[in-house]
Length: 428
Image 1 (cartoon, rainbow, N blue to C red):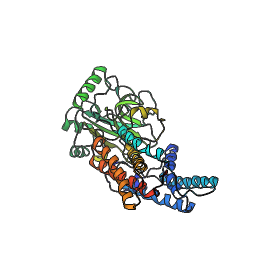
Image 2: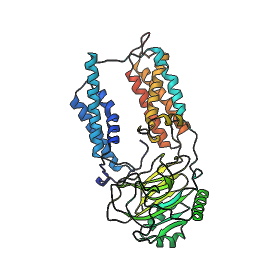
Image 3: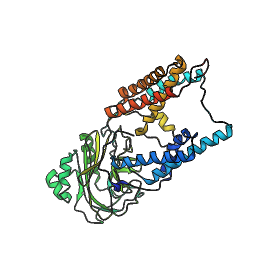
Image 4: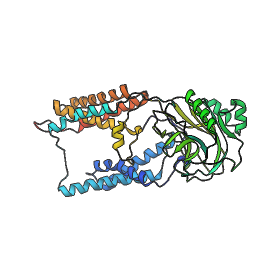
């Protein structure tokens, strides 16, 4: 859903965990495709869903941070078929196929102010991406959460924490050293860590530092607003979830200063800032499937005050810009939504598309539908430009994301303009 980096395509990135919630979301995602094909046949809906899902998942083989899955293809295809069947059931109950949907002018005209207000609600000022919301009461621990839940199973042979962000060439150099003692000889004494540990020597799940040492760690990192975490470890299971915390500076499952965790064969790195939230997951940072058994990994997690990066054996596996401006749902609206609702800050491009369509409908309701097709197209596209430009100028700092939002809004406005019927006195 966001501008992404490319990687060398590999079948090793395919990951197929059975996640009922994700399967349900994928079915919902493709139901509109089946509804749109309701006047064809169920076979065409199936083939359309299968083809589109297969192309999407195939592209993800070359996208950083994406995880292709055969379950996604199956559930997306099922969604297209379900949408077709729902639409056909509607037609059977109504007795005829709908050709058009009348929208009465007063109702349609209300779409314009609704679209503008909805767009303004998505605009938020830039949120700081420093460590000002860190808690000094949290503890540095290894192996699992302090509560004992979601315990991580594996061996940590060493880790180090530094109050600065290492560069990619520096991490590539460290990847060939083999252990933390050689890294310390180059970088100096770490702010915290354990070098050359043996299996079972780290007190998993319990604080690794004394209280004065924890305060020193907290004060130094908050002052610098930068961080490098180096970890040498081997996992014992690829079925760990939660995420299972390998090294964490936290206190409970939902609040952390930072965490390096494992989810299946993937890794996640979460840093708490005012922008990323108390769980450090806005946006989340996940690698693709990078872990296997019987291998000692060198993982470096860095944060330079804005961008968090995760390296595996010296190679960049994922990154997230925590300081970038992006459209956001208002906190009051967010708090009213069910916790299981599959809406994230990263997926709000769909909201701008919807608002562009509403704005186009409102304009046609107020000014009437132009009789010429070209005029209708230009009017709808202008509505998309207006919504997309507002979002780009006031809520997006990444030009690639802004330009893509603008193009999608223009396309949405054009789609509405291509769907409206000829003008009449009381309907659009």
